[in-house]
Length: 475
Image (cartoon, rainbow, N blue to C red; front, side, top):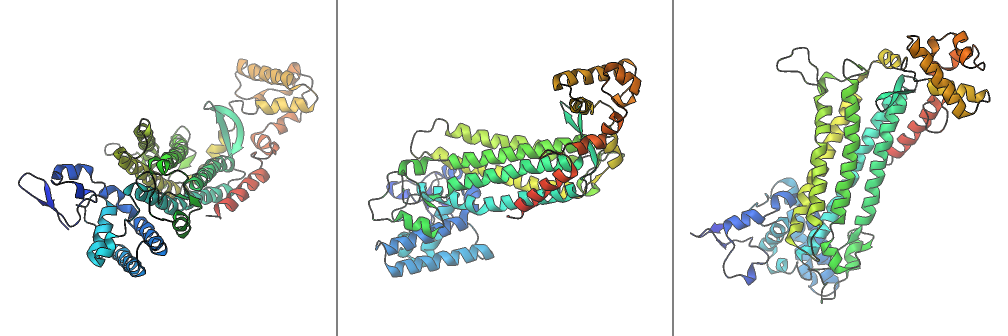
């Protein structure tokens, strides 16, 4: 299974010769082979290639294109390769052009001429497209489980903090009082959309391209629908040229990964901010923090920063695919071999980031007094002052103006909160103010008053937590 090079550096003999070598008198230059090989990237699809080949061979036999005995030999040979790859008894020969060539050559080594019939009616063009779809259908549910696990962790933490006050921000300025639970649920619903987006993408990848061959289908009596059914697809792709030139699914899944990564990055940005001395809301576990080589006191949120930093890698993978595809004529072009590296890298990156984020956030502790203190000052209850006046019959736009006057009065008199004004000062602005205003604009009262669906009131948050847990339990 090793290459033999002549004095000119060309390949002259190879049991795993390129599948296309028959037309050529002279073998490819060794450097050319090294340049074009993709086996280090596509080896992860080995089992998917075997499963697709088994279904293809079974269909060929059912259609009378190969004999029953030949199919049995192929099935046995492919099963033995699968078992040996899984157990480690068979090592991948990285001198092979790609994983498809390696498996077919290994099969032929084991079963002889029957192995040479496996590729009947099939091109690597539709074979690769099939393997990618099979691979994605296999690994994306695992990614969804990982996301669901993080949703469960966040929901569990949130359930402990339904009444833990935390100020909400817009423009990074104090906005309105909320709770840690409400904020963690917001993170979780971002992740819920990521899971749903992946499911939506899976629905479009659930069509088999096998039987499209190089681009124009096959003159042999193939049964594409039979193979699709065997492999658990919903049906077959409808145009053979599109089938082998389409990489929308690579772009779509990588786009899904990029959106997921953007969510993780936003969460990590908040963790980095919250772990600063100035905020001090969160204390990350020492297991998920690092120190400094020169400053002994440092406890750095490096893992949150690394997740945030790796967002550029995933975005780059998406741009890689988009640029690669933008000018390709139909049907297949060798450029398409370059689809797998960015797709797989983006997948691996978000999968690893999710696992780290889950462990990091699950082991963190929260500074509840400092979080609650953040809700005081900054006039985060100004909207609630307006709502108080609305309940008294004042039009909201007028009430908004009155509340703004209260803010202005507090600023002008050196006070940091509306509630620091006396009732006399408030009445001077509007006679509708009564003593009960002070009880209604505490941070906790403001939070509890927001009972609309999705709001921070503990009962509303519990409904969100229940919905998130129910959703995550499906995975």
